[in-house]
Length: 115
Image (cartoon, rainbow, N blue to C red; front, side, top):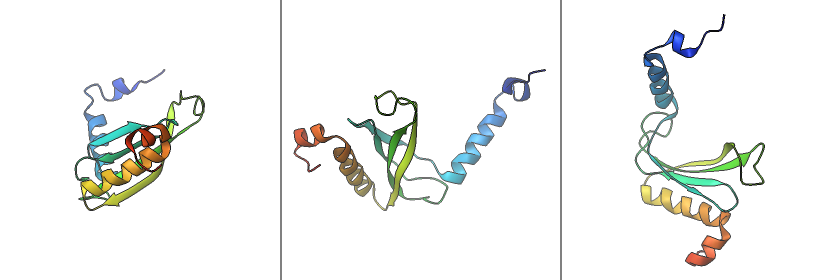
């Protein structure tokens, strides 16, 4: 007999409890994410992180595409390769912009930023 998740938790209450617990463990915050020309995704948190080791701070992060399709621009999975905390949103955004321009040389030239 095959048992599905809906048989165990038909209301979705258990799933929401697990999601909330995971957010408390690693932290959560709204993010702004940008897709780079080389397939990477770069972003920063637009609000302070709640819960987890970075609680009360802002963060900048970068994700590298991996697995099948990573080199052709059709990646289905990414690995976080950069994640740093910052005291201010402005500092996190500045670092995210540096990372974005590093992985998007055409945009860097267009906006006059050093790649």
